[in-house]
Image (tube, rainbow, N blue to C red; front, side):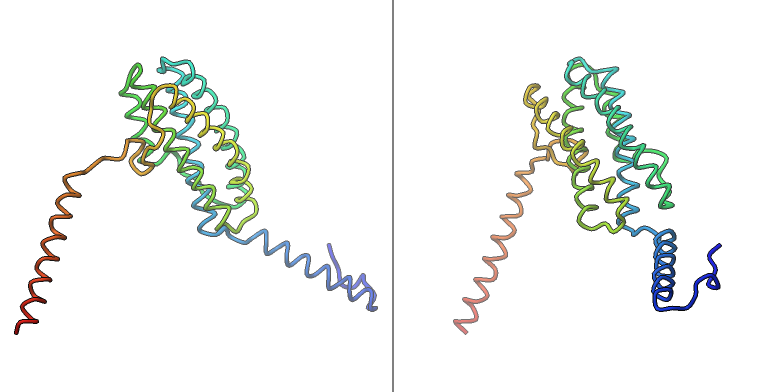
Length: 223
């Protein structure tokens, strides 16, 4: 037990005492400092991503017809399990409660994969995982730029090269299978819908409005 009585009061002793007290206070502060909202959100979402990738990776090993897709599934299971082990240790140290499963969107993707078969499964797996890994990269980038806890940021830093390598492998597989690699990450891996009629209607409305404004100005100038 640290006792103030054991240090004689000298200039050197006073300096040692001050340094000791500061170190104790800093240690106590860091031990009880709660992680920021950004850190918490990152850990929770990254955990869900790992769970989702493990689940769809297992599906790929069971259902894929293309060997490259099967190999990717096995790779995802191994890598994301390792990433999540480190993430869980960090979350436990920071007192962050993690979700019990993937997000609703990730579960919806898994259901689509469960319903697909043959080549359709292979193509859907590649497209959805391209989208998922792109979102995972953005999640990690947000933590590295906006996070505050060194432990949480280390999780993002350690995960980044793994997720990037997965995305590059998926892009190569997409080229081999004829799958578009520029999927819309906000649509669960579905290609972005094309709406020419909506755009045309919007242009017509804009033209009508401009014509009305022009007529009003013309009438005002004549008055």
